[in-house]
Length: 142
Length: 115
Image 1 (tube, rainbow over the protein chains, first blue to last red):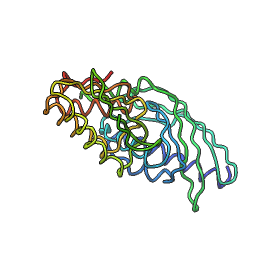
Image 2: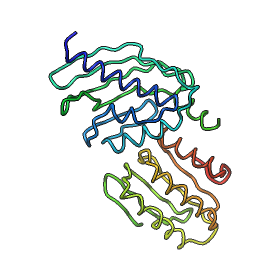
Image 3: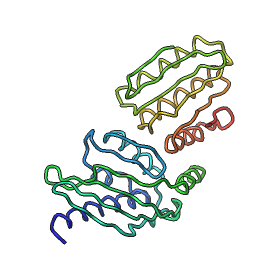
């Protein structure tokens, strides 16, 4: 594995580690650190539509993080493949939501860019997860 | 009908026979949120007590804390001032969760509904 691919993989793992941090109640700060903060970033969560620009994306992560509890952990990065093209890379990912968050296997695509020397997420797309939406609605009642 | 905002973020307030109808869109920045409360309250003040309030949320993106607080304040005041029912129409799944949480916090599951 080449140096750039190792760096992209580390950035990708920081993103998925940040998800697990959020779901166990650790807050969204690690997620903020995993992203480039510009107007030219985009995201689609498993239970949402497109968000464009860091401010809009941050609002979705902040709200999602508010559902985090210590006992709700267990999300997993099941597999991934990374493709690097200069200072841009993308990763195809299979992700398993934790049982409390619906437990569904979700296929994702992430685009990362190396800006100011740091690889971070600039685009995240996750396939829809009805199970996650239902789980979060149940969490509201707990 | 009064329009506030632009193509990226905004809302309209429309006094229809059946309800005061508020249509929302976009991602609301911190600077934009303060326009929301006075505009809708003004619309309600021009209606008789006992009217209904409808929010069309189909094109509204998930709100920051400031936006959620504005909805909380507005819905509380509207119900206290005589609005009989509030309907939140068509939000995306994440925005729907934000609204359901607000409704639970207000304890207003009977008078506020998400459709």
